Amino acid sequence: MSGRRLLEIASNSVASALAAQAGGADRIELFDNLAQGGTTPSRGSVAVARDRLRIPLFVLIRPRPGDFHYDAQETEIMLRDIESCRQLGCDGVVIGALTMDGDVDIPLCRELVAAAGPLGITFHRAFDAARDLPSAMEQVINLGCQRILSSGGAVSAMAGSHTLRQLATQAGDRIRVMAGAGLDAGNIADVTVQSGCNELHASAKASRTSPMRHHNPALAGLENDWVQSDAELVSALRRALDQMG
Image (cartoon, rainbow, N blue to C red; front, side):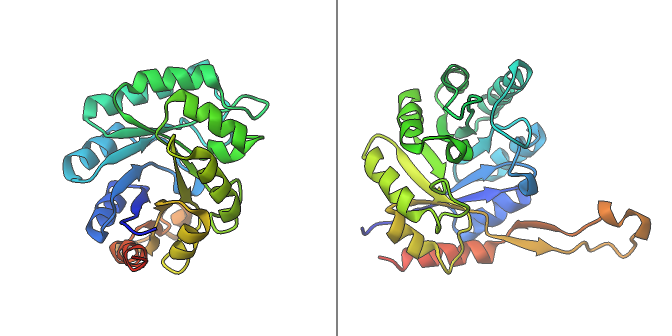
């Protein structure tokens, strides 16, 4: 299929989001705690990102790491975070919740969707943890979400590309399936072809070394290097997609 593919960059900080924009990303998913699968970023991070980005900003709504089954207190947190995103002028939110049996938690997700109002909605990789992906897709479609982020239930989008193609075929024009997990410039074109997905999600992360000259050796665990999205890696992803024609 010809035409421009959409590249979303998973950004674990405002610095990552700005690097992604500079590298040619089409949309940002902003979150915190990359190493633990992502949680909701601070209101300050969302506000600064919204002020400085020219491309659409979606914010992950996830109150903690771990599974995707949430209690009443966690639901209240998510609803308040969505309200904050609306107040700050975000373009969308990224949600997801499951029952204890691995089905989409319809009542809870309906609350989240209603709270989002006019914002765009992506159903995140809680989808991949569902017990039956085709059934989960129908549930997500009925919720009114615009897209699902998925690796096809596999460890990476490459490994799950066959399942992603089946899901994209099932989805038709009703919802977009966005392939994500383990994408880089070397495999993103192959995943696009094999999955049939035209929205791709990657972190394009690189290590950053602390510029501080003084380090307390006793606090080494608190002063580790970190990772963030890299503009050149994003540019490489963008070129790989554009060269597909």
